[in-house]
Every structure is written in structure tokens, then in C-alpha cells.
Image (cartoon, rainbow, N blue to C red; front, side, top):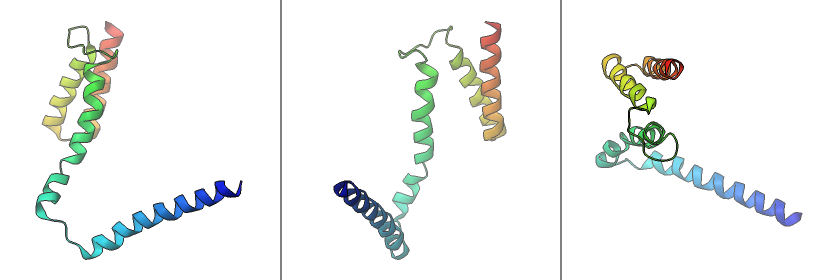
Length: 105
């Protein structure tokens, strides 16, 4: 039991040390412009990696047929996002379109 607590304390100290090192280091180090520009695309990349498989692979295999209602709801959500530039309206439109299509079909 002592080994367990020793390991937990050591892991906690190491986690804290790695996190505080970045805070201290970034205070003195300026991020290069190239890295700063590249980091702007990380949220878009992560969100794309999350929602594209959900749209195109609802049953675990790629389905781009007319039976996949998620594709149509995703296209509508993309149009709403492009037109309104609002995350809230995009989510509402996409979810409403999917729910209505599933209800009617």
C-alpha cells in the first residue's frame, strides 16, 4: 500500500513539474511565427477528425449513399455555418435537420 501512495505522489509531482515548466518556459520564450500560424489550425483539424467519421461512417463503414441522413444534415449545417458564422445556429440547424429527417423517413 505504501508503494501505491509513493507512486501516486511521484506521478502527481511529475505531472505538476511538466505543466509548470511550460508556464515558466513560455514566459521567457517567444513562439516563432510559423508555429503560431500553424497552431491556429489545430481546433479545425481536431473538430474535423471528430465529426467527419460521425457523418460518413454512422454504422462503422463508409456510407455516402442517399440513405445516410447525416450527410444531408452535415451539408445543411455547413451552409448555415458559412452563411451565419455562428456556432450555435450551425449546431441547431444540423441537429434539427437530422432529427426531422429521421422522424419523416
